[in-house]
Length: 333
Image (cartoon, one colour):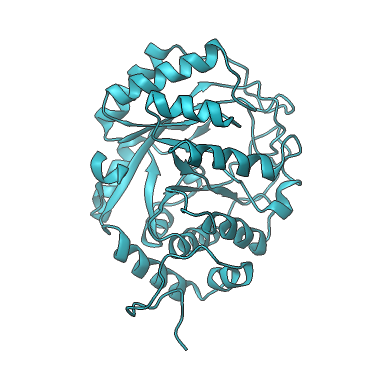
């Protein structure tokens, strides 16, 4: 019987939007060598195997968020050690974007610790940041919390390429991590982003206490969006003192590999991004994640408030692997 997840026959359907959780969990639980082989085969059908997109993420408004996300030190509900800071001015952000471009990044993402976007001077400043980043020739991405259809259209008019709004986990496990907004709130924001003509960036976090079925449920939700998200970040939990998840054990790197490989099979055209938590991974583990289908990295020594490998360290890893940074035109395709 033909395996619908891997057939290369003329009648194969390599891109699907009708996955069920049992199918996805069966993929996720395959013997690891078989899973990675399938993922690498799909990857080579749709992507250059020796290219990776480099993205830089900057916190433009840090701390003081009204959400209670159990993993986040920026929540005002936790003692995470992150002090609330004033919003950066546009000139500071554009200068950071220029440095990121000089280091090889093609996408610059700006994050604000907001529950939702509110109209006014702060949002107007974000729109100026987007315009400034676009003038540098970079892809512009923001992650600002929930936003309305009108706000999404304003971001699009300013030139925004992508909007990040992670599902984090499955709908069933979500209430164990966050209580201040619903899963449906997140999906509505993704719908507003898509309707405005902005690329969708949405993924999740591994290691919060979720089960393999929860991971499969989250991936099923993403894979059944039509079209698929253009970017799917896969984060390993970074436990931070003062947050409810501070005591979680480190993520087994092979669990991360499984999620990445499964995402690659489910969403062939999507850029799967190896995101937060890379400082806890060896070079070999990061290389295996890329072999399993990750073709995008956050590049730079910080991700919002958590550490990230340095630029020189990442450049050496890519060089040793024979992987080259993706050009901007290819990154935006």
